[in-house]
Structure formats: structure tokens, C-alpha cells
Length: 601
Image (cartoon, rainbow, N blue to C red):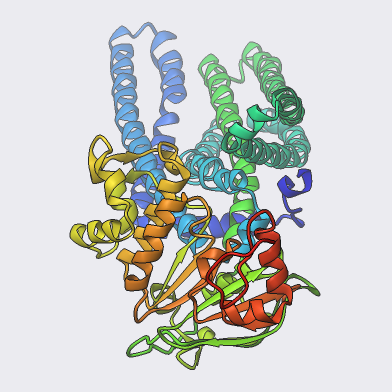
């Protein structure tokens, strides 16, 4: 199972391409982004006011003992702080709102894309990994929009403004201050290379944890029954440890990077004090300029530190966006034509013409399968496990695409039909019934145009009404996750009612009565004689007693049709079907075709 949970390897990353692709999500909200941009520009300008007012206060008022002028400077500084508060509030509010809207759009796009993907994709990708894409990875991208993409310009404007003011006040002292900048780029480049890979590794193990957790929780009954708690705990601890190791590796880069930035800032201030202090003593520089330079230097490194943090956010977001775009770039293998054929009326004739199929290259599940089911007729598929029976129904619904040959509905290749019309013509009743959170009624109707009355009529027809009415709130009873509050037989009855309520032209039953008791099965068989009238039916069954009245039976063996005929005719041939029948009833009396009284075996 470990290979099933492994993330697909990523190729060489292209940060700018990923970033440009992410920026497209800002398009619908360019007005809010522009307003945020202007507010950030104003914030950058207000950040320059404080140190310059300090210089004026020292050189023009404190040095001359001018108390009145000092009060005016303090008043200006207070007004600047109040303006900065208002501007920052507006900027943060707009960015956060925009970020939430982008997250909404991105999650909706991912979920819509997941629903369009072919089933083979879900065979290869565990649910936990896909949940990581929709939840954790999108949250990481949200951080980029709310704290990175736009606000980085504010930091750049602040840096440029501080550099400009410092150069204007004393260009020599400014160059001394800027002397440590090359070292900053060296440290940042080292951090960028290491942090990116550590973020990738962290995201990879988050997906592994989610996948393992989802699998273990959904199979908790089996875990406890077979006493796998300790083994699962050991396996989870190993995955968790590797996730922790990946985080520790990322922490190492943080632990070195931020102190290095603080050290560079301290070195810059030391250079200012050494060089500027000597100039003040020599009388070639005022004390106000020196103090302003120290304050500007502190503010100079603050946006650099912020840029570093935003760079970390960007690295995490880009690592997540790689996975998101890898998912979004996965093209569905089963798609409808741009100009699909629409049948004016679906009659229900199904034909397989030389159909072969392999889930993997050359590992054939079906080989040159040909048969037809006329409208309103019934067909049963029997055979040993792995003979390809369920694959036939999956190909008919276009969950997978036939490798060779073609499948037609009313003479039209199903690849040419509108997938919506094709699937609305089918109703599938599976052995493993999936129920959604909601009420009993909503699980029968599934949000379609089926009325409450029609849903209840379908439930009565399959004899599900009796147990539903016995529930605390009847049809309005809430169904727990995956129908945990219902028995297996009750869930199958609901699935049967769901199929009949949608009035399909083609009804596919895949082991649909395997978990229903004998009495209920007899009631369903009686109902089917009425309900299947005029519909095409394809029945997959291991219990041969349930298919004795179908119009034709196909016996599949290793993906090929080995026998075909009615129940009595196939028994008379004494071939594979006869052997299956004997095996199933070997402990019971066997009744040869055409006889009424049971004979001793």
C-alpha cells in the first residue's frame, strides 16, 4: 500500500510560471487589488514620516530649545500614526476579503474538476491526498494572496523610499548602510534553495498522513476485528515521524535565516554609529541626521524581514500550487464530444460490438465481447470472480473507455452521445451502496426533479416503505455518514428505490440482492416483474436463483463469452453454467431442467 500513497514526482519547478498562473485568480477582483495597492502605497509613504520628523525635532527644535516647534512636530507625528492606522485597516480588510473570494473560486474549480475526472484517476489517488489538495494546499495559496502578492509591493516601496531619503540626507552614510546588502542576497539565496525542497517534502508527508488516516478510519471495523491497532499505530508513527523530520528540516532554515537577518541589521547600525558618529564629532554631520539614519536603518531591515517572511509564504504556496495545478492539468480521459448526439427518445437497446478492455496495458479484462440486449429485454451476466462482469456495466456508463470495439445505445456509439443523457438513461444498483449525508428522502431523490410522492412510491414498490416508516422520523430521518445507522439490506433497498424513482430506460443490477434476506428478495422479484416492464435490464448475479427468469444469460470466463442462452437451456448443455449451478447447490437437491419434483443428488 505504500506505493499507492506515494506522491507523483514533480519535475523542475518554474516559480515565475506558477506565480503568473496564480496571479490570474486576481483578475476578477482587480478593483479591490488596485484599491489595496493604493492603500499600501500610502502606507509606505507614511512609514517615512517618523524618522524624518525626528531629525527635524532634534536639529531645528531640541538643539535650539524651541519647545513650541517641538509640540507642532509631535502633533504631526500623531496625525501620521492615526492616518497609518486607518490606511492599514482598509488595506488588510480588502486583502483578506479578496483572499477569501479567491480561495472560494479555487476550491470550487478543484472540486468541479474532480467531478469531471475519470474513475481510473481515483483508483490511483487516495482520498486523503485529494483532500490535501482541496484543503491544506489551497490554504497555503490563500496565504500568498492575503499576505504576499500585493503587500510585497508595499515593502518594496518602503525600501525604495527609505533608500531615497537616506541618499538625499547623506549619500556617503547611506552607502555605508547599504554595504551589508550583498550579504543579505547570499543568505536569501541559500534559504530559497533549501526551504523550497523542505516545503515540498512537508506537503508530501501531509498528504501521506491524510491518506493513511482516511483509510484507517473508514476501515476501523476491520482494524479492530483483526487487532491491527498496534501495527497501524506503528505505521502511522513512522509516517508522522517523517513528517516531523521534514518540518524540522524546514525549521533549520528558518532558525538560521532570521538570526542572520537580525545580525546584518545590527552590523548596519554599527557601521552607521561608527562612521556617522565620527562625522558628528568632527562637526560634518548633525545629530538629528545620525538618529534619523539609525531609525531608517531599523525600518529598512523591517521590510526586508517582511519580504523574507513573504518569501517563505511564497515558497509554501508555490510548493502547494505545483500539486494543485498538477491536479487541474490532469485531463479527463472520458469526455463528451463538443457537438454530442442527442437521442429524441431513448428506447434502451444496448449493443457491445467486439469490445476489449484493459485497466493496464495488455492486461485484458474483456476480450472481443459482442452481444445485444433489445429494448425491454433482460440479460444476466454470470461467471467467476474476475470474469469481467462489473467491467461491462462500467463501460456502459462510460466510467471507463473501451480499449477496442464500440458500445451503442439505440444504434449510436455512446462516445458520440451526451454523457448526461447517457447516464440519465441508466440506473445502477450496486452491491456496495453509497449513501450521502442527509435524509432518507434526499438519498432516494438525490437532488433531482423526483417528487416526494414518486420517491415514496418507489420505496413502496421495493418494500422499503415498511422499514422507513418504522424509523423515528420516517422519510425525514437523517442518514449518518455512509449510512452507518442502517443495515446492509436496508441500504440496498434504498439504493433500489433510488434507481426506480428516477425511471431509467436501462436498469443495471450488480449483485443488488446479495445482502437481502430470502423473504425480501422474493418480494423484490415480484416487484421487478412489474417495474422492469418496458425497461432494458442487465443483471449481474452470483446467486443463480435470482436470474432464472431473464431472457438471456451470458456466461463469462476470463473476459470472453463462453456460453449463452436461457437458464434451462444452459443447464441442459451441462457446461460452465451447469458446473456453477452444481457448485452453488451442491449441498441441496438438484432439479434437472423440465422436472418439477426434486431428485436426490
